[in-house]
Image (cartoon, rainbow, N blue to C red; front, side, top):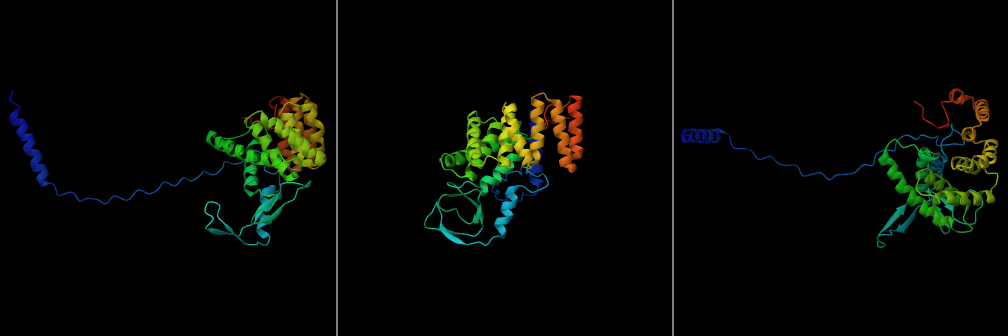
Length: 301
């Protein structure tokens, strides 16, 4: 078969089509826009942000509000990365002493002075972590979010540990180092954090043995770390000191000890003390009685 005429016909058709097509107009290509990464918003907290009083704002938010209402003393300082340039500081930060202070003491200023540290960023982050990892197990709906929290928490604990190493470290520093270590332990960042949290708690209680919040954190920390019997007196102190969540931690502790009656009675006391939580308490009591619940913060379908 002779394919040559067919090939010539196809070729001539292509040429005629090309000749009949209007010339292409060159379109302007928009310059590529720079990619800007926007960090996603954190997911909602699982645990209450104010364990002392569920109806009150968390302490960090209150401190920030107080800082904004205080007079601001502007200050011009040199930039660390370029001393030839300067910037004006005009926003109050949360400043606490680093040594020789046996009570919580916060002031509001644009810059920390000698033997002081700016804890604005630290407190902001610790509040976020607290909503996810105050108790064990931590609650992160997204794995990538947890990884980000882990990295930042390691950085924060290193900074706080360096300050807390001082034998005369302030109560403010020790309290933050203690809480950060508890949450690092809960997030399985290393067994060293268990030892650190125990050490910090003992130092804090030596300074302020009846502090309700410290007794609460130490109590549930012991309980969730395996020291359920040792946790009882600390959780009792926290309950008497008015820490709302101490009731739930105490009930949880009794569940670990397989003392169902004590757990139910603690939840009934909780219901009496906090009537707004009656629905929650009733549900917990019902699930404990039926054997469905073995942990107060257990997620049931």
